[in-house]
Amino acid sequence: MSFMKLGSKSSEAFHLEGQTWVCSTGLPSDVTVEVGEISFFLHKFPLLSRSGLLKKLIEELSGDDGYVCTFQLHDIPGGAKTFELIAKFCYGLKIDITPLNVVSLRCAAEYLEMTENYGEGNLVSQTEAFLNEVFGTWPDSIKALETCEEVLPFAEDLHVVSRCIDSLAMKACSDPSLFKWPVGGCKSQDNAMANGISTEIKPQPQGDNWWYYDVSLLSLPLFKRLILAIESKGMKPESVAGCLIYYLRRFLPLMNRQSSFKDKSHATIPTTSEADQRALLEEIVELLPNKRGVTSSKHLLRLLRTAMILRASPSCKENLEKRVGAQLDQAVLVDLLIPNMGYSVETLYDVDCIHRILDHFMSIYLPASVTASPLILEEGTLIAADDPLTSMTMVASLLDGYLAEVASDANLSLSKFQALAVAVPDYSRPLDDGIYHAVDIYLKAHPWLTDTEREQLCRLMNCQKLSIEASTHAAQNERLPLRVIVQVLFFEQLRLRTSISGWFFVSDNLANSQDQSGNLGLHRSDGNHQLDSAGGTDNVRERLLQIEKECSEIRNELQKLTKTKRSWNIFSRRFGFRRKTDSSSSKESNSTNAKTQSSTVNGKPNRESS
Image (tube, rainbow, N blue to C red; front, side, top):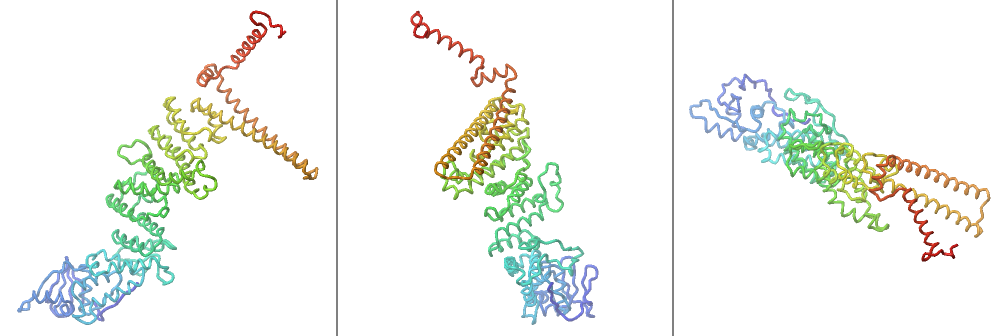
């Protein structure tokens, strides 16, 4: 740490007695200066020879009789501690100027008018020269800026704050290794004890983030001004956002916790009040860069959760919701599970908040994704606009996972579940396994739903887009309406028929191509031809066996549905099917009537038929 020694005499003659500073030079004191609760018994000549203000006060208050004059300097920057150093300087005693006291000394020297008019090498010029040295190094500049808080109005008038911020902003945007600046914390071993308080060195961020910890020591107003200056000098938005999050995590305990309903300790914050934390959060949110992806979705969602707990302003929460919505495809499920902090808690998680976030996402990506939809675009132009569709698909998968998590909440209404499920278009789900899983969980957690409501809920999924595993599970799911089970079985059988037809079509084409190649003289060795033919036959046979097995499983499922006569009657009435025996008997009666009519013409036997 830099420092400057002024004066050559020992300061032992200047000592404290209770609440009084006394200069024991052998001469009686003729001036008393009161600063706060401390009184300084001094001599007129050393003071008036160095300070214009003190000279003026002494001349005004001293009479011709030479009695001791007394005056107050309660407004002096730095208070009694700074005036002690100034008094020693006026007496020519040794004082040390350091980055921790140079700002207050500079302001007090200006306040007392300690210019070159009252002695060469006066305190104004000395402290100004030392400030220029301080601004040359990062740690000293941080220390000096911290102390500006104590004398802020005077430091602002002397432009000390602005010069210090400009110096720090320039250094933060530069490579510290090029200038050999000591980084990684401004606390040194020599200053391990300051004012009786231990200042133990803490682990610091490394790499491009080396300056995070040091600037986090500043008060919010100074930190805000420094961040704006750093951003204006071209700092990467990612680094600015990272520093803002680092600052918040130091002062907001909620930023370091995961969502938990068992954690009740967020209400007790020993160091900072809830109002101060709320103000801090709202200020930092306004400073976050607007560029998409600069602040991670994890941190944005954690900020949103903290804002809800601290009852932040609606504009702050809306700002965060829009930021999350702009990059919802980068979020993970666990961060979306925001507890419901409303006064009237209806659901376990804040479903309305996620719905608003989803609406923000759709307002940005829906027009582009519709353009990029493969149902509308030709194959050649799909490549250029593939990103919006990919983002939409990722969000749809994320939404299905979220629905599965909140579906078990008994207080979640059917209307809210449906509104959230249909918030993304149908083409964004390549498979409907995820929404089927969520629907199944909702049906299990809400057994009181009517048949109409269950069928309405099942319309959220498309049975044609279920995988084989999901179709097999749905066919055996007793919670699904019967109509849905039949649809699943129908589309599965249709899929199997299509698959069988495709295999036979490929087999016929393979045989025709082999015949044509033989006719054109494209000869191959007999051994290779026999191996290829045998391999193709084995593959077709294996696929057919697999399809027969799947058909057998579906047949067994149908038999389960027709165990009782009542269930089959319900099935037949609902879908218009008739029993096979009725159909066959009707066919036999029809054929008998046809034969009778053919054998009789106008009441006479038809001889031609015989």
